[in-house]
Image (cartoon, rainbow, N blue to C red; front, top):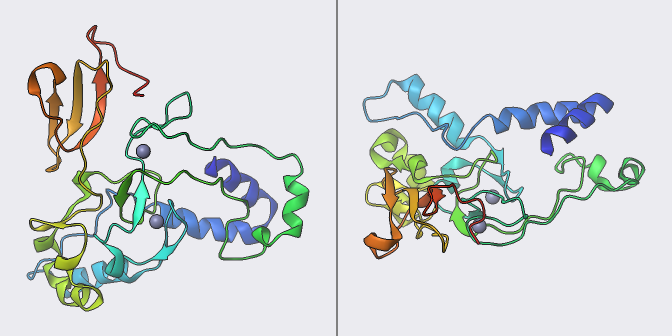
Length: 238
Ligand SMILES: [Zn+2]
Ligand SMILES: [Zn+2]
């Protein structure tokens, strides 16, 4: 959906093209696109590059607020749905319904009379109200959810720790957990009632399989795929 608006906006006016050119640059930073490791042995220019990334202002794709990584990394100040949007419009992770996107025929005219088209801090369309995510996470610059694979090793940030701590001590950050800064909170995996097998990522980003019948307690992690007794992939989790 965003991509469509991007094309519409860029075709029609150069101002929005500029805006979106900036924003698309921002969106290139995927959750998996990490701050490079900057250990105590890092070269000064490596530290400088990482520092620039950490202090740059970003716009959060999830909540629209402005943030920088230096102050917000590992603080889990935002919310995401780690699952997928099912065909019935519900999230596989929590069963909540996503608000439907409705095309408004008078929008091309109406947009000329509200601040959405002129205010540089807002996108040139009314974003669809999003249902708040069911998992706490860091602010995100892409639509891909954070996973435990995005956790940042504290030792990989050692050259930046003095500046990070000045902003907010890393060990007091919500996502601080056994030597890593998590980018999303720990939670239990979701198991569909008819699941015979659930493939998931555990808290250490290892891929594992959970078999409800024999494994007992539901483990922590993030579900990837579920199959029923016939081995068919489950599409509706709720
Ligand atoms: Zn959810
Ligand atoms: Zn956010």
